[in-house]
Image (cartoon, rainbow, N blue to C red):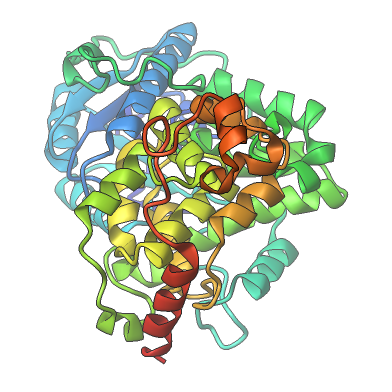
Length: 477
């Protein structure tokens, strides 16, 4: 769906400013398609506007953004174009660019989190003489358009997913243009390297995984659909099985691939339906943020405003460092810190541990994920944390408290995941791998392991912590 302000500019040759944000791709990009279709010169621009997000982009996501912008510039160069880089408030930068280029139109793809919508409105207001075209390019269905029969927002995922699936038909593929007409004179551009998006010394991102940019996204999708999709319904919960995840989340977060392209490419059948459900879940998060813009900071269930969370700096630090004494939790937190990504099943386990075993406010965990995940998304990150904490709409019930030992034994029975990320436990037999503190002395000796020296004892008694959490949560009912 496109939105239009103004008619065709009197000067048919006046350039079109193409404003990139979280749509860093050439294919299936409606704003780019419209701009190229005008036949006018196109000036692609990315404005590094720290205020565009509700908060400063996390360090890991900044690392990914650098690679994505670098890839986009290379792709534009193949079309005879280039990416202009500017920094500062979006409205001021685009007004300046319009003045320098004599632009007659602005094209962009809409965002739906509150701060981004405010920026869009400010930009449109400050460019009254330009024709403005905006499009929905980041979701299967535009947030705010999937409603109940009574015209209200869905608050439960299952009916939302059914309504979305029943009403969604993916658009046909839209390849990138062969060429983009360049302006007579290119405006000046800042240097990507000067933005400091990637660390230098120390380079804490040296082991980050993934290939930022549209080519990497398309390659990732092709490999997943060809090699991994059929086993997805089973392997998706096994963090040690590389076939269990598409690894498309950062590509989708930065718009390097259209979600409807993913929907189409995975095809039909049981496995595809399971995976499409994850795409619908992503839409559900954007849908909720559109209707409930305070959900990034407020409990969606007001009863939880009375919750007295624990202040536990030592426990929080142990959790962030992967030193809790619970192997599946520690493996997940170390994977996150090392690679900028964590398996989805393990995200649920570590979130439950922080909120229900340690009784630490979900917002502290959400903020850590925001800084450490390359795929940290304003809607997804918040909704998933509120789901795990039981504070959100359609959240996990308060009495669901994951047992980290049993979760490890169930989803990592052969220990492949834990042994990779917690190598000090590698020599323990499977029977004791997820409960090393309970292992007999002779087993620990054979593994060369001393609990409390080589690996920490559990920082909390799970059974007692579960009882404490249930009492606190019940008191809110």
